[in-house]
Length: 436
Ligand code: XLS
Ligand code: NI
Ligand code: NI
Image 1 (cartoon, rainbow, N blue to C red):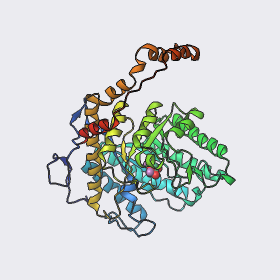
Image 2: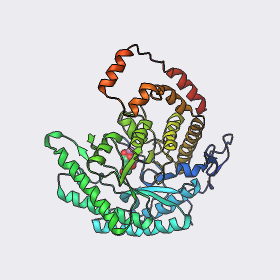
Image 3: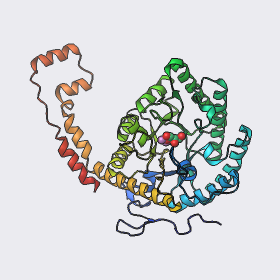
Image 4: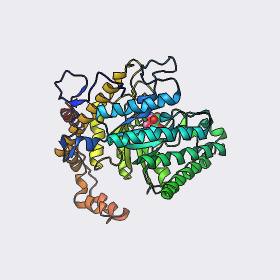
């Protein structure tokens, strides 16, 4: 059997003092944190697109990545990729993966050929899954790259495009069933508009909901119910995407009565593009009991686009993991590295090194978040901050026993309101103690 990473064995936990770059320094899969192993908490997944198909090109430069799986024909390359991908997963000890239909199989010259290619490649993937025990976290249909999706997929002005997208979603659900997919994602890359001058926004959104309802109905028909997820993003490629952020997407989900079947897949870099922190988006989702899964990466605050960098910021992963602990975990979702190596990290081994960095950063986040939770750090802060609702008039307000008239009587007697300082600088400094 060919190995694509001949210099690297299965990556082990060696502790933070190790000099071995191909070792985990913080991620110790079986270590128990708050009653659960790290791997159960984190449910890491590798993204097929960034890891297997991204070539390092950008709008100003040619591909840079050296990828030894390139072969004579697209189908031969696709098959090599499956081998290499499972080698990566196995060596990293990652148990889940995610893909778009076009990542795994060449599109060929017709939809029929595309579907046949998908069937052949998913047979191969299934064999590998059975052999290794690796599972499918989610798959999705790429309904944004091909020129036919110029004006969107379900939100396209052209009904034939809608039909084409529907066929891709049907196939996506068929392969989800075949591979035991735990979730199914919709990211509406071009479900938005370029100009309101020629756009019927309500009609387009009604159509998106129509496609989602068809997906629910088809899942029921074939007896396969993955958790459906919508991945919000404010812009790029569209100027304005309908699933702008968690709150906007929840309004959509509620408007169309999709709460029972849909949750959110939240991505760190999309949060920052929307002008939010990642933890804000996770917290919004939790308010609606709709935190489904996460796309782990990080953006660059100096750049205004989706740079999809591997997460290395422990402040961010700590606050994200805190939200996940508060959520009681992320299953059946997971932590998918929707992250790509920088253009200058072009060697094969960088794929492993980058994932090790991301996994270690999340492991540190998990440990810090667990300590914050065990110490009741945020709980105590918040209990103190909202203490006036624990007794007296506050307790009556939250018990819904007051109204505008009774509160006016109260306020007239108590108009000398005293506030307490938040001491926020001290709080942030104490939080730092958990990060190192
Ligand atoms: C792009 C998105 C995409 C989704 C899956 O910005 O993050 O990769 O995760 O279509
Ligand atoms: Ni994503
Ligand atoms: Ni993204």
